Structure formats: C-alpha cells, structure tokens
Image (cartoon, rainbow, N blue to C red; front, side, top):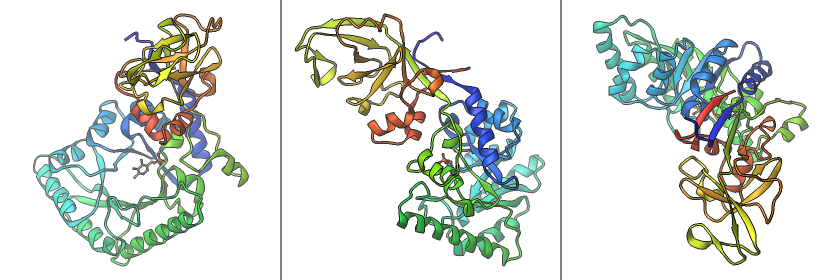
Length: 387
Ligand SMILES: *Cc1c(COP(=O)(O)O)cnc(C)c1O
C-alpha cells in the first residue's frame, strides 16, 4: 500500500486528548470512550489500546463486529454496545463479553433467551447489561416510567445483571436557551428513571448520560460515567467551541488527530475559457495551471465540498475547481506557480503539525455538515498511517 492519498494518525495528539479528558472530569467519574465506526475513522484498536493504557474504564462500539475486532486485538477493557443487535448476533455478546444497551420487553426477552441457550454449553454468570432510557433523544430506550419494570425483568433473569443505565441527549451541543432547557429536562427525566429502578429495590449501577457535549457543557449531567467521542479525536461538538469554553474559564486543550493528504500527480495548462470536470460547472477565467489530485468522493472527499474547498500545498491554500470526481479532483494553482511542483504533498485537512491550514470543521462548514461526518466518510481505500 504505497498510495499517496492517505490518512496520518498523530498518535501523540490522540494520547494528549485522552489525558486532557481524564483530567477534565472528576476522578470519580468513569469515562467510556466511543470507538465506534473504527474510532471515527482513526483506527479503533489504536484508540482502544491508548484508552486502556491510561486507565479508561469503558469503550463503546456500535456493532458486535466492532466489539469482536477489539477483543481479537487483545483489548480487555469493558465494551458497551450502543446499538441494537439481532438475535443471531447475541451469542457473540456473551462469547466476547460485549455489554449491550437493552430496553423493551421483546429485546430484553430475546437476550435472556439467548443467554439461557448460551449457558447450556458455556459458563455465564451475571452477564452485565445496561438499561437504555429514552429521555428525549427519540431513538432507542424505554420511557422513564417503564425503567423500573424493565430493570426487574433483567435482574430476575438467571444469567443477566444490571450493570448500569444510559440515556442520550439530543441538543446538548447547542447553546440556545430553549435547547439548554430541554437538556436539563432530559437530565431530570433520567433521574426519575433511576429513582424508578431504585424504588424496586434494584441497584441502578453505573448511570451514564452524556457524550462530548455534556462533558464540556453540563457538569451536573456527568452522573457516574461520561461517554466522549468526538473530543477524543480533537474536535468540539457543534456549537460548543473553544471560544465558548474559554469564556467560561473551562479550557479543554484538544488537538485534531488525523491528517488527510495526497500529492500533486500532474500539472496541466488550461487556456482561458476551458472547462474543468463533469458538468462543466467551472470555466477558467484566464490562462491558468491546474493541479490534478488522485483523491475523490470514493475516498471520502464528499462531492458537496466543491465549490468552496481549498487544499494546502507548501503552506498556501488553493481552490478545488469543478466537480469532485470519484477518484480525482482538480485544483487551480494559477499561472506559472513557482511554489507548486509535481509530486508535492497536498493537505486536505489535519492538525497544525501536519502543515494543513484546514481542519475537519472547515470542511464540515463547506459541506453543510459536522466534523463527525467528514471524519467517518474517509473510506477503506484511504490507508491509515500511525505516526
Ligand atoms: C456516539 C455516541 C457517543 C459519543 O458522542 P460524541 O458526540 O462523539 O461525544 C456517546 N453516546 C452514544 C449513545 C453515542 O451513540
């Protein structure tokens, strides 16, 4: 794999972010690092190993396969499964010690039945599950008023125990007054759910409410465990910006981890009036030189980034022109550009030390999306180099 279009993972930055997060929360607050979607495109095993090294208590995945990958790599830290799996996958939950978020009579009953079946041939005692509560996210979970009964269903089973309770916030990344109020209500609803479980005489276990945004924005919503994802990889969730945190005197010093880079593989001259790429959306306004880059939307450079996207070559930004193709795109470097040569490195985004002038947030703005989507769009074809 010698392709020049690749992602460099600056592992010192990853470690730095994890350590900063650990310092930011109370020592008694557990941390569950989200490594789903291959660690937001950064290599889940690397992230998990680093988290494990600095004593992070939990890792979170979205699929059973993601959990198995970590176990096969030797990760022994507790793993939480954040999404629903199907009955055929449940055997592997027990086999690989992956704790699911559960809710609803049907799903809980299938897990209990799968545990009973598994225990016929294997040892299985007190297998931990987390009760998911929907306090306003409108996704998975039971309603707070159902939490008591559902916890009872879990603890009455032969092989399962209740390890904890989780909920997820819908607008904790927003600073608007009505959204802040909604987040507060979600916190109250979660407390109600916890009380309902307690009132059945059941220990609710580790209670976990928020992701990165709550970690930064809502100290009172940390409960027993906080579940950061995007900040681990060096970006602030949506509106929760560095500027805002500094204004509250609450700095979290994080650095982007991944640099997306390629090289100039051809430089061609175009006369005034010539068009560039599909649809002929870009016409050269004057005689110019165009650099060809071997990167396109099949690598994760989304088609909607053009027009608007610029890339960095030798410390200067140049505009991508015309439509981004599946495997290639074109950059206007201007006539007789002495600074840009064949095979020069091109940075699409990355941390300062990569030489990039853009971050994933800059691309997100251009593409009307969030850094999460920019990062997780990088495809399998883009080799990750750990540095
Ligand atoms: C992805 C996810 C997280 C992490 O979210 P970030 O915004 O990246 O910090 C936490 N909890 C759940 C349930 C998630 O799905």
